[in-house]
Image (cartoon, rainbow, N blue to C red; front, side, top):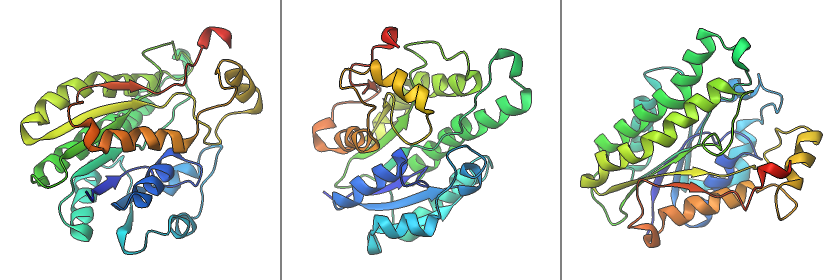
Length: 254
Protein backbone atom coordinates (compact mmCIF):
# COMPACT_ATOMS: atom_id res chain seq x y z
CA UNK A 1 0.00 0.00 0.00
CA UNK A 2 1.73 3.14 -1.21
CA UNK A 3 0.59 6.44 0.30
CA UNK A 4 0.81 9.94 -1.14
CA UNK A 5 1.38 12.33 1.73
CA UNK A 6 1.68 16.04 2.34
CA UNK A 7 3.87 16.62 5.40
CA UNK A 8 4.30 20.12 6.81
CA UNK A 9 7.20 21.42 8.85
CA UNK A 10 9.98 19.52 7.05
CA UNK A 11 12.77 22.03 7.44
CA UNK A 12 15.38 20.92 9.98
CA UNK A 13 17.48 17.76 10.04
CA UNK A 14 16.73 17.20 13.74
CA UNK A 15 13.05 18.07 13.46
CA UNK A 16 10.06 15.77 13.76
CA UNK A 17 8.88 16.73 10.27
CA UNK A 18 12.13 15.59 8.72
CA UNK A 19 11.93 12.32 10.66
CA UNK A 20 8.37 11.77 9.44
CA UNK A 21 9.38 12.39 5.83
CA UNK A 22 12.34 10.04 6.22
CA UNK A 23 10.16 7.29 7.70
CA UNK A 24 7.47 7.58 5.06
CA UNK A 25 10.02 7.56 2.24
CA UNK A 26 11.70 4.57 3.84
CA UNK A 27 8.35 2.79 3.91
CA UNK A 28 7.99 3.36 0.17
CA UNK A 29 5.51 6.25 0.21
CA UNK A 30 5.51 9.51 -1.76
CA UNK A 31 6.07 12.70 0.24
CA UNK A 32 5.39 16.31 -0.63
CA UNK A 33 7.27 18.28 2.02
CA UNK A 34 6.56 21.85 3.14
CA UNK A 35 9.13 24.08 4.82
CA UNK A 36 9.46 27.71 5.83
CA UNK A 37 13.09 28.41 6.70
CA UNK A 38 12.63 32.17 7.31
CA UNK A 39 10.81 31.28 10.51
CA UNK A 40 13.54 28.91 11.72
CA UNK A 41 16.12 31.60 11.05
CA UNK A 42 14.45 33.78 13.71
CA UNK A 43 14.57 31.06 16.39
CA UNK A 44 17.44 29.93 18.67
CA UNK A 45 17.73 26.57 16.89
CA UNK A 46 18.34 28.20 13.50
CA UNK A 47 17.66 26.95 10.00
CA UNK A 48 19.27 24.23 7.91
CA UNK A 49 19.79 24.79 4.18
CA UNK A 50 16.67 23.20 2.74
CA UNK A 51 18.50 21.86 -0.31
CA UNK A 52 20.81 19.91 1.99
CA UNK A 53 17.87 18.60 4.03
CA UNK A 54 16.12 17.35 0.90
CA UNK A 55 19.34 15.82 -0.43
CA UNK A 56 19.79 13.88 2.81
CA UNK A 57 16.23 12.59 2.63
CA UNK A 58 17.21 11.13 -0.75
CA UNK A 59 13.66 10.44 -1.90
CA UNK A 60 14.34 10.71 -5.59
CA UNK A 61 11.17 10.96 -7.65
CA UNK A 62 9.07 10.11 -4.56
CA UNK A 63 9.98 13.41 -2.85
CA UNK A 64 8.88 16.90 -3.80
CA UNK A 65 9.01 20.16 -1.87
CA UNK A 66 7.57 23.63 -1.57
CA UNK A 67 8.51 26.55 0.64
CA UNK A 68 5.31 28.12 1.98
CA UNK A 69 4.50 30.64 4.69
CA UNK A 70 1.46 29.17 6.41
CA UNK A 71 0.75 32.50 8.10
CA UNK A 72 -0.80 33.44 4.74
CA UNK A 73 -4.48 32.58 4.44
CA UNK A 74 -3.98 31.48 0.83
CA UNK A 75 -0.99 29.22 1.51
CA UNK A 76 -2.75 26.03 2.71
CA UNK A 77 -4.96 25.59 -0.33
CA UNK A 78 -2.10 26.52 -2.65
CA UNK A 79 0.15 23.99 -0.93
CA UNK A 80 -2.38 21.20 -1.41
CA UNK A 81 -2.76 22.18 -5.08
CA UNK A 82 1.00 22.02 -5.58
CA UNK A 83 1.18 18.61 -3.90
CA UNK A 84 -1.60 17.25 -6.10
CA UNK A 85 0.09 18.71 -9.17
CA UNK A 86 3.30 16.89 -8.25
CA UNK A 87 1.91 13.49 -7.31
CA UNK A 88 -1.81 13.31 -8.04
CA UNK A 89 -4.52 12.98 -5.36
CA UNK A 90 -3.36 12.88 -1.76
CA UNK A 91 -4.54 10.23 0.69
CA UNK A 92 -2.47 11.43 3.67
CA UNK A 93 -1.99 14.73 5.46
CA UNK A 94 0.45 15.10 8.35
CA UNK A 95 0.22 18.56 9.92
CA UNK A 96 3.47 18.82 11.86
CA UNK A 97 4.41 22.48 11.45
CA UNK A 98 4.07 24.90 14.38
CA UNK A 99 5.02 28.38 15.47
CA UNK A 100 6.57 28.34 18.93
CA UNK A 101 5.75 31.22 21.25
CA UNK A 102 7.47 31.81 24.58
CA UNK A 103 5.28 34.36 26.33
CA UNK A 104 3.94 34.49 29.88
CA UNK A 105 0.65 36.28 30.51
CA UNK A 106 2.13 39.79 31.01
CA UNK A 107 4.05 39.42 27.73
CA UNK A 108 1.18 38.25 25.52
CA UNK A 109 0.26 40.62 22.69
CA UNK A 110 -2.66 40.65 20.31
CA UNK A 111 -0.27 40.46 17.37
CA UNK A 112 1.46 37.35 18.66
CA UNK A 113 -1.84 35.67 19.50
CA UNK A 114 -3.10 36.36 15.98
CA UNK A 115 0.07 35.06 14.34
CA UNK A 116 0.25 31.88 16.41
CA UNK A 117 -3.43 31.23 15.75
CA UNK A 118 -2.98 31.81 12.02
CA UNK A 119 -0.04 29.44 11.68
CA UNK A 120 -0.97 26.71 14.14
CA UNK A 121 -4.77 26.61 13.95
CA UNK A 122 -6.13 28.47 10.93
CA UNK A 123 -3.58 26.94 8.57
CA UNK A 124 -4.26 23.48 9.99
CA UNK A 125 -8.00 23.79 9.44
CA UNK A 126 -7.55 25.16 5.93
CA UNK A 127 -5.11 22.35 5.09
CA UNK A 128 -7.61 19.76 6.30
CA UNK A 129 -10.36 21.49 4.30
CA UNK A 130 -8.32 21.51 1.09
CA UNK A 131 -7.15 17.94 1.64
CA UNK A 132 -10.71 16.70 2.12
CA UNK A 133 -11.91 18.56 -0.99
CA UNK A 134 -9.42 16.78 -3.25
CA UNK A 135 -9.60 13.36 -1.56
CA UNK A 136 -11.00 10.47 -3.55
CA UNK A 137 -11.46 6.97 -2.09
CA UNK A 138 -8.43 4.92 -2.99
CA UNK A 139 -6.57 1.76 -2.07
CA UNK A 140 -5.08 3.66 0.87
CA UNK A 141 -7.83 4.96 3.21
CA UNK A 142 -7.60 8.66 3.98
CA UNK A 143 -5.52 9.73 6.96
CA UNK A 144 -5.05 13.05 8.74
CA UNK A 145 -2.55 13.28 11.60
CA UNK A 146 -2.31 16.45 13.67
CA UNK A 147 0.19 17.37 16.40
CA UNK A 148 -0.47 18.77 19.84
CA UNK A 149 1.70 19.23 22.93
CA UNK A 150 1.32 18.42 26.64
CA UNK A 151 -0.88 21.40 27.51
CA UNK A 152 -3.73 19.05 28.51
CA UNK A 153 -1.50 17.25 31.01
CA UNK A 154 0.29 20.13 32.74
CA UNK A 155 0.31 23.96 32.71
CA UNK A 156 2.40 25.81 30.13
CA UNK A 157 2.27 29.25 31.75
CA UNK A 158 5.39 30.42 29.93
CA UNK A 159 4.02 29.59 26.48
CA UNK A 160 0.45 30.85 26.58
CA UNK A 161 -0.14 31.57 22.85
CA UNK A 162 1.40 28.22 21.89
CA UNK A 163 -0.58 26.32 24.55
CA UNK A 164 -3.82 27.97 23.41
CA UNK A 165 -3.22 26.99 19.80
CA UNK A 166 -2.24 23.40 20.60
CA UNK A 167 -5.21 23.10 22.93
CA UNK A 168 -7.44 24.12 20.05
CA UNK A 169 -6.03 21.36 17.82
CA UNK A 170 -6.46 18.85 20.62
CA UNK A 171 -10.14 19.76 21.01
CA UNK A 172 -10.76 19.91 17.26
CA UNK A 173 -9.53 16.37 16.65
CA UNK A 174 -12.80 14.67 17.57
CA UNK A 175 -14.89 17.21 15.67
CA UNK A 176 -12.77 16.90 12.52
CA UNK A 177 -12.88 13.12 12.75
CA UNK A 178 -16.67 13.22 12.77
CA UNK A 179 -16.71 15.70 9.89
CA UNK A 180 -14.57 13.44 7.68
CA UNK A 181 -15.44 9.88 8.64
CA UNK A 182 -18.19 9.63 6.00
CA UNK A 183 -15.48 10.27 3.38
CA UNK A 184 -13.44 7.40 4.74
CA UNK A 185 -10.83 9.70 6.32
CA UNK A 186 -9.63 9.19 9.88
CA UNK A 187 -8.29 12.08 11.97
CA UNK A 188 -5.97 11.59 14.93
CA UNK A 189 -3.57 13.76 16.88
CA UNK A 190 -0.17 12.98 18.39
CA UNK A 191 1.38 14.43 21.53
CA UNK A 192 4.99 13.24 21.08
CA UNK A 193 6.12 14.21 24.57
CA UNK A 194 9.53 15.77 25.20
CA UNK A 195 11.35 15.25 21.90
CA UNK A 196 15.00 16.05 21.31
CA UNK A 197 14.97 18.31 18.28
CA UNK A 198 17.79 20.55 19.51
CA UNK A 199 15.70 23.38 20.97
CA UNK A 200 16.16 22.80 24.70
CA UNK A 201 18.84 24.37 26.88
CA UNK A 202 21.28 22.03 28.65
CA UNK A 203 19.59 22.73 31.98
CA UNK A 204 16.12 21.95 30.64
CA UNK A 205 17.39 18.85 28.87
CA UNK A 206 18.80 17.51 32.14
CA UNK A 207 15.71 18.41 34.16
CA UNK A 208 13.28 16.79 31.75
CA UNK A 209 15.60 13.83 31.26
CA UNK A 210 15.36 13.03 34.95
CA UNK A 211 11.57 12.84 34.62
CA UNK A 212 11.68 10.36 31.73
CA UNK A 213 11.99 6.74 32.89
CA UNK A 214 14.37 5.88 30.06
CA UNK A 215 16.68 8.69 31.17
CA UNK A 216 16.53 10.38 27.79
CA UNK A 217 14.21 12.48 25.68
CA UNK A 218 12.09 10.89 22.98
CA UNK A 219 13.58 10.97 19.51
CA UNK A 220 12.06 12.44 16.34
CA UNK A 221 12.23 8.96 14.82
CA UNK A 222 10.02 7.66 17.62
CA UNK A 223 7.43 10.37 16.91
CA UNK A 224 7.59 9.37 13.25
CA UNK A 225 6.95 5.78 14.30
CA UNK A 226 3.69 6.79 15.97
CA UNK A 227 2.64 8.55 12.76
CA UNK A 228 3.54 5.46 10.73
CA UNK A 229 1.37 3.37 13.04
CA UNK A 230 -1.60 5.69 12.55
CA UNK A 231 -1.14 5.49 8.77
CA UNK A 232 -1.04 1.69 8.76
CA UNK A 233 -3.97 -0.65 8.08
CA UNK A 234 -3.79 -1.67 11.75
CA UNK A 235 -5.17 1.79 12.61
CA UNK A 236 -8.20 1.62 10.32
CA UNK A 237 -10.60 1.76 13.28
CA UNK A 238 -8.82 4.52 15.22
CA UNK A 239 -10.17 8.03 14.74
CA UNK A 240 -10.81 11.10 16.86
CA UNK A 241 -8.07 10.14 19.31
CA UNK A 242 -5.24 12.13 20.87
CA UNK A 243 -2.28 9.79 21.36
CA UNK A 244 -0.01 10.69 24.27
CA UNK A 245 3.29 9.09 23.22
CA UNK A 246 5.29 10.43 26.16
CA UNK A 247 7.24 7.31 27.24
CA UNK A 248 6.01 7.63 30.83
CA UNK A 249 7.02 11.28 31.31
CA UNK A 250 6.81 11.99 35.07
CA UNK A 251 6.40 15.75 35.24
CA UNK A 252 6.27 15.73 39.02
CA UNK A 253 9.90 14.55 39.16
CA UNK A 254 11.35 17.51 37.28
